[in-house]
Length: 227
Ligand SMILES: Cc1cc2nc3c(=O)[nH]c(=O)nc-3n(C[C@H](O)[C@H](O)[C@H](O)COP(=O)(O)OP(=O)(O)OC[C@H]3O[C@@H](n4cnc5c(N)ncnc54)[C@H](O)[C@@H]3O)c2cc1C
Image (cartoon, rainbow, N blue to C red; front, side):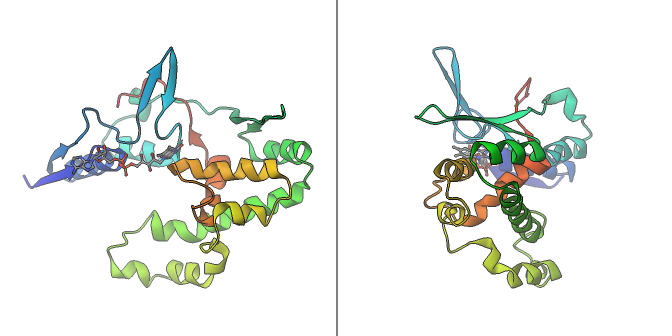
């Protein structure tokens, strides 16, 4: 049996180890921490649970895929439900906004709460979708270690649309170009926290995350995760 060594038991290391084992490798995983999960970790204090990294997973179909590849039913290990409200926003002046998970409802309620036209919100969300659609095959579905990746039609299409990605702007600058409402700007800047970044440093392409959250769904509530 061929052998493989995986360094790190974060989500990536664990997923890689599972895939290698399915391919017939005997896999050893080495982890520096005393627990698996990497950034996917939590602390509890005074009865409250604090997520240290992700509080939800985007692209839930990829989590399901991993279980299915291993011949397991995701529901036997990993139960989750889709929440109706994605996030509760609170401001110091007492303003509150509950962001609905359903995109039409989000547009309706956000346009009312932040006094913006629904069509402007839809245009912003459409641009986010385009950022994701143009980059997913390059960054998520193909190996960057193969030269054929760089010569594919999709890559050339992405390069032709490079200006759309807001790579030279921060997420905050990219959002400010859309919104006069400071609160709406803060709401969309929040997506930088999806990888622990600052909206003042992370590039504007991060605005594709709301698309993942609103249109592709998330795994938001951990119930009986066996990790
Ligand atoms: C604050 C924050 C919020 C986030 N929120 C979300 C979210 O809501 N949704 C979402 O999908 N993503 C979110 N992310 C991103 C997500 O956490 C990461 O993309 C993901 O956890 C990275 O997994 P990984 O396996 O690549 O790396 P890591 O989780 O960093 O795992 C790497 C592992 O390797 C180990 N390691 C490193 N070097 C060695 C060595 N030499 N020997 C042994 N072990 C080693 C480390 O100890 C660690 O356990 C968030 C990240 C942060 C920081």
